[in-house]
Length: 221
Image (cartoon, rainbow, N blue to C red; front, side, top):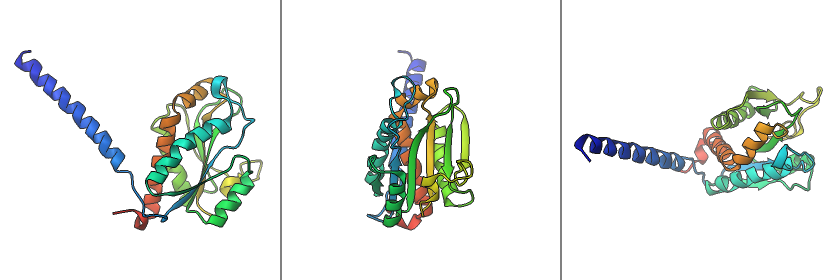
């Protein structure tokens, strides 16, 4: 190996090492919270009969797999997580979340329409408050890993022909509902199936960053 080749090899090794260290540093920088200082209601879809394209199976199964990634990350960083029971209804979910007086309500769903539509969309009750800020963080996090259409932030209070989206309207705390992508679309369905872990990690990171921004006194120094 001549001197020039050696120099380039050393530079390449340095770049790789720096990149790995930066990634490790980024992971370590996720905020941690004082015990029981912040809480969240985690509500993956309970729609067992909502079947996706190909090997997707049910929305309930796949979104609970995403929540299985989200939950331990949040707990590891000090968030008190309450999770829904798929056998109960969304009315039970909001009632229990309100009784527990959690800081955030987070519903995780995948979408369906006509088999052709694609995209990520996140709902809050109304724009202009913490619910919208939470929804924006979730949307931004997903768009870092998803290359499909960004349908942005939408309001849920008149979503169903003038009737509200229940989980974002009946929850007394800031709330958002994410539709990760369209499970009845071939491309989106395959993307979700191939990215359960990255999706969960992105959502967990967004939740932690949002809680830290809204509850700075709860963050461990």
